[in-house]
Amino acid sequence: MRVFGIDCGTECTGYGVVEWDDTVRSPQLASLGAGAIRVSKKDHLPQRLAHVYCRLLELLEAHQPDVVAVEEVFYSVNAKSALKLGHMRGVALLAAATARIPHAEYAPLKIKSTVTGYGLAQKEQVQFMVARLLNLPCVPEPTDAADALAIAICHIHHAQTATLQAAAR
Image (cartoon, rainbow, N blue to C red):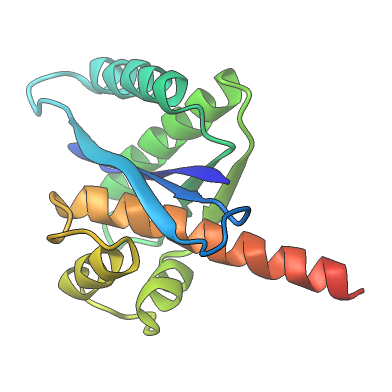
């Protein structure tokens, strides 16, 4: 299973690709790449959205994931920031749909809890655990990329659990 995680942001959208191959003798999570799509504050919102959309389509084509995992909307005190973030999430979901790749969404608490064991973990804790789980030599940078990898790891863990539960029925 290859999962493309997306951590949407208004100025920096992180992405990370994680693969789990359970056909090998000793299956492990493996990072196939991570990074960030940055947009300029000077650009108007439509240009930012178009840039992120085009770049996501390129990355989805290059990595050929089985599923795209995105963080669910969180509630913010600042309505304007939440609305802009919602636009970016819409672009991410549109890119997955355009590429005909199924998607899954996870709440921030579920992602952190899955990766660190604690739903209110700090960004540094998430980075540390992502590096450990993926056997990386150092923590992924920027934090948006680490968060995207965490989202992908979260999906893999929950998909495995769902598969085991279905098999037990």
